[in-house]
Amino acid sequence: MIRSILGAAGLAITLGAWLPAAEAQQAACSHRGALDDAYCDEDRDLTADPPQDPARFRDPSTLVFAYTPVEDPALYANQFRPFLEHLTACTGKRVVYFQVTSNAAQVEAMRSGRLHIAGFSTGPTAFAVNLAGAVPFAVKGGPEHYESYRVQVLVRADSPFQSLTDLKGKRVAHTSATSNSGNLAPRAFFPAQGLVPDQDYRVVYSGGHDRSVMGVNAGDYDAAPVASDVFGRMVGRGQVKGENIRVLWQSAPFPTSSFALAHDLRPELAAKIHQCFFDYRFPEAMRRDLGGNDRFWPATYLRDWEPVRAVADAVNAPYTRANFDAEARAEEAAAARRAQQRQQQQAPAPGTPQPAARPQ
Image (cartoon, rainbow, N blue to C red):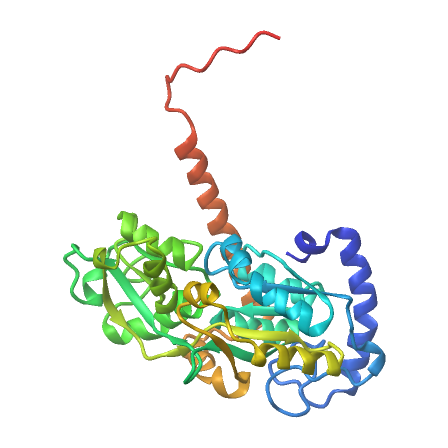
C-alpha cells in the first residue's frame, strides 16, 4: 500500500530516513500505549506526542489536505475548495487537495509523511492515530455543537422488512472493513437485535456509504447500514428520494469525521492551522453541501472517540497494524470484485456482432 503512494524509490528514501529516528524515539519513550513504535505518548492522551528533537519538526512549503473517501473524492475536492483557499491565505502556505480512493491509502499517506492535514472517517480515525501519528483536533458542526451521526439501516420503502431479524438470509451491504458506521458498529450492535453478520447473512462490501445507499435504492441490496449524515446529504442533493428509502433501525449518536494534523508539524504551524480552522465560517454553498454545518468545533481523540473505541473493543477489533493490513486487503479485494463486475456489465453479450475494423 505504501508503494502505491510513494513508489519503490520514494519508499526506500522515506524508510531510510525514518528508521534511525524511530529507533531513537523507541529508546527514549517510556509509554506509547496502542501507538505504533514510531510514536510516543508520554502525556497519556492516546495520540502521538510531538518529536522531542526540534530538528525533526516539519515545516513544509506546501500543505497537503485530504478528506475521507466516504463519497466520491472529486465531489469533496470541489466542496472544500473555499476552505483550502482560506487555509492558503491564513497560513501563508500553498494548500492542495489530495484525492484518496480508500481509507487505507489515506492512513498510509499520513504515515509516509505525504499528508499533513486530513479529515478521517470515524472508524479509520483510530487507525490514523495509532499507525500514522495523526492528532485529531476538530469536528465540523453547527452553531450549537459539533455534528454527530447515527448508524442507520436502510431498506427500500416498499420492502416487507420490519425488523433487523427480517434480514436473515438477505443481501446486506456493509461499506468497508475499516468503517465504524458501515461495518464495526453493526457487528457490535446487531447481535443484540437478533442478527449476526457473517452468520445470519453474508457481508457484502459496497466500497462506500454512497454506494450502499444507491445499491439499496436500486434494489441491488436488501439493506445496508450507513452513516446518517451521508444519507441525509444524498437526499438533500437529490441523489436519492427520501420517500423511496426507509430507516429500519438506528443507533445512538457517534462523532462524525475528525480533522487531524500530522504529529510532527512545527508547533507554531500546528497552532496556526488550529486557529485557521476555528476562525472559519463556511460559505453558503459549503454549508449546503456539508449538511448545514457552518464551522469547526474542538474535539479530542481521548474524549470524543471513546464510544468508537468501545465498539472496537466489543467486536474484538483493536486498531492495530495487523488488523489494518487485513482490512486494507479486504478493501482491495472488494474493489477488485467491483471492477470485475463493471467489466462484465460493459462487455458485449456473446454473439454480439463487433464493428468492422476501419481500413488503415
